[in-house]
Image 1 (cartoon, helix red, strand yellow):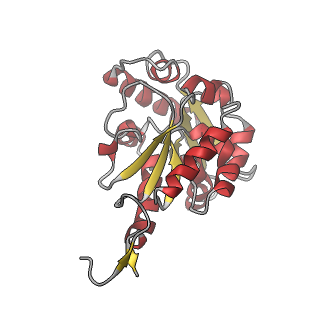
Image 2 (cartoon, rainbow, N blue to C red):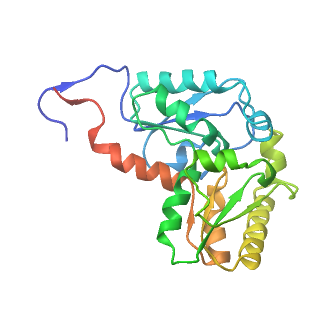
Length: 245
């Protein structure tokens, strides 16, 4: 309960995390970072015009840094306490975006990989499931602080027919059941080929609707962007404006 004198300075209040969202039309079901009902707390969205998924994932987000910097600065002016994005491949802009604002920036769930690795017993490998393994480069991994000492097993959904096609080609319809089957199939292959995988990190911010399915299928802990947003929210919640004057 708020008491005493408080200080404002913003136009609206009540959210902790701001989310820079790609310029998309594909369906975002509950669990997806772009569906506000995913979170039990308010978030603030900012659409980055021209940031289509194909450009960001398949073509390296070429030329988009100024638009993301502008979006981050606008979210900061609106009072968010931290900023994330709706695509894990934007990890390549982690350093630049963190320098552009005064609030914490966490562009991708890939930032969790070094932490998850430290949780595992010696010899344990971190599995990464990504929307497109062929375009997840060493540049992306290095930007997330994933060094050569972190053993990885990376698999993607690019060979499947539904999920990656709908997202990267920005199609207006998604067969959720088929997408779920694809995630389970790829996760099953990941742990079959790499039984030393001790935990899994989902790169793609559209994958959390299937996190529980992957957990059930593999028996491994599964971390995703919703895990990270929730953690950051909890770190910010009691300190957000309006604050005591």
